[in-house]
Length: 394
Length: 59
Image (cartoon, rainbow over the protein chains, first blue to last red):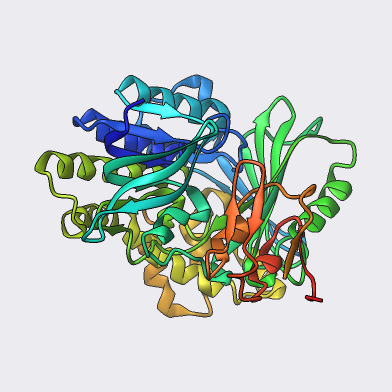
């Protein structure tokens, strides 16, 4: 394998693959390194995406889709159910990330990217002027130094690549969702509804989800806000829920994971380096959904990185164009959602019950996510404009 | 110092994401804490989804 590359992408998830694909598409030589043995595994994800958002980015293959979602059901602590039927434009899919991530990496490789698994990056190298110019990696057990013009850090929630270059990527404790998820089979659930349970008894500062995957299987998991994890541990809370609601379900898979519920980092580029996806904190800070936003972010980065290679300019100043592109695309909206999330963290179980009662009083044909969130912020009118702007395109 | 119950660890990286001094190394199926660099803030212990990390007093 050659040791000089235009671009080295660290991490083979959707954001990494999209950034690699688009860098290569516009002419760069690209190497993508994944630390695990297989792209897409383990699946630390509830696998929900919006149809329209995904279709804008890629031609959707039916093999990726487990179920199609046309409504959500939010359940408050006193068991008040608020169902919202989607307009067609809001419909969702539950994906099979194992197949999906693999296909994205395959598409990248078909565009000319060289992909390697079991390849762990443990450091960066720097030029005399301090610009990032390569990675220190262990590839299939062998220590190597590889040089690059630009490194793309797509290393997920841990986001260590950025830290190696001096970027402040550590999450505040209130901005991490501490999560666990089980893939449960043998359960009788609506196959087209995503269910969300809110409140202290399920997930303080977060929520519990049931996302159907067809054949009486579902992803059932929860995320608890990092600063509330001393009240309740995610694994204990999930165990309690499963034994109460699905005592006869089988558990086919069980994973833990952190969900970055933050706004995008102020600094996601430096000389010779850009961060994308979870590593740049591009997850929706309310829903915790990060597949489509990470892919879009990765695509925007890839396009600018390829441009930088062509112009032989790898400076922070040039690469900042990517940050501006992202801010316009989703970053600005995520700042609004982040403000709303911080307000939601202050709500009590009584508040949630009150909100659910008011929301369920809206006739179902007139109920929308936007209307529900307008009720959520009823105590803080200054957030209504943020809600309208953030959810009008929902 | 922080002690890892490695047989329960899922190597998910949640601890790494909140560590303010970047002292946790995460491999595919191995985790290492550099207790020289660790400042005993215990944020990692608090956020671990599986309750795998423990604080032990130095002797």
